[in-house]
Image 1: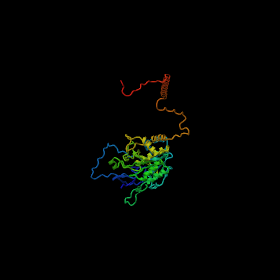
Image 2: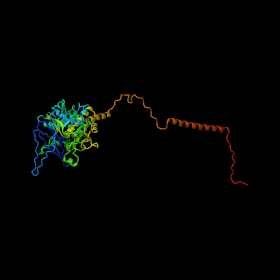
Image 3: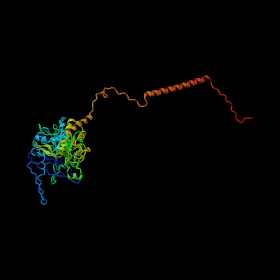
Image 4: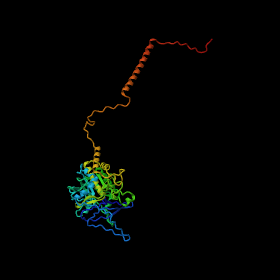
Length: 471
């Protein structure tokens, strides 16, 4: 029996935060699909200054490794965590440049758009998000609590990538810094070891699912974009119906494809598990790339990948106003959701199909053959996608025409020539035929008059004798 699991697509999301932050690392769980076991980490870990790294324990049977020569190059230093608002702005520059966000901001910054974030709770008091987060109902998790800030760590990070507004000239900027966030908390708890309680994830096998409720709620409460950094192995009918419902209302759905790219199953089969909702038709599935535009090793590779965005060492905001770096398709999904918010802000009536077309047709760093299952059509370009969306909308615009002016004010077009011979030749042929008929009639009349003057013509006939002649 297929066991479905909801997982945070930030399974490989690792936050490093300046200063000690107490946190308990979540346990690693497994999920089976078609008899193949694949490790799935449903949460994230936060390495802190107060948690020392474990030292490797040498094996007694193994010979000691030789000391490296003095000329050996030093080990590369781990990524530096931004320490302040000025540092994070500088550290995130490569992300904004890869997405070409600053060029898009010359047109719009996402004002008037609500992005629904189906994730953990969000700390709405951090400077980058203060006054711009709408708290929706709990869809299946504990709301953000300032006494337990880790419950909102992932959601706060994703919200900052979508709509972070900075701190004046400093602080982190999201892709759509004037958009608003509708926070819909949804995290599925782990199955208890003793199996005594029904896991929240198994609710997907019923008539409804928490994710389906979240999508419908977002569509009914003003959201134009839904960002989902989560997934499950296997589709669900209520979720498919909720996706179709949201799309019918013009809502654009963006979801992470998952972090199974370096799993044993992916290595053995040259493809990753499909994760949902990214796998549903009409949902924009997002993969992750590094700062060189190369596919991240952990990013799932399958045909649900439509586009990609930065997902390695991406600076984020975490609860309490601290900064960290994230790694995973979660981050890439939030960034693409921000780009979609820019498009919806400029063109509110654009359809989800056109948004997808604008993103895919303008993506950069695309594969040589146009598409592959690692990065889809390429890395999203916010400015180019925004311009493409404008051209697509211009092609569908209906130009109003005043009554009585449907054909304009110009002269009426000349009547096209009828098929067949030219009129001049037709008249010539007709005149020739008429003249011929008249000449024939005249000739007949003259012959009749000539025969009338000579009188009737008589002929003498010799009688015919019957029988034999006598001599």
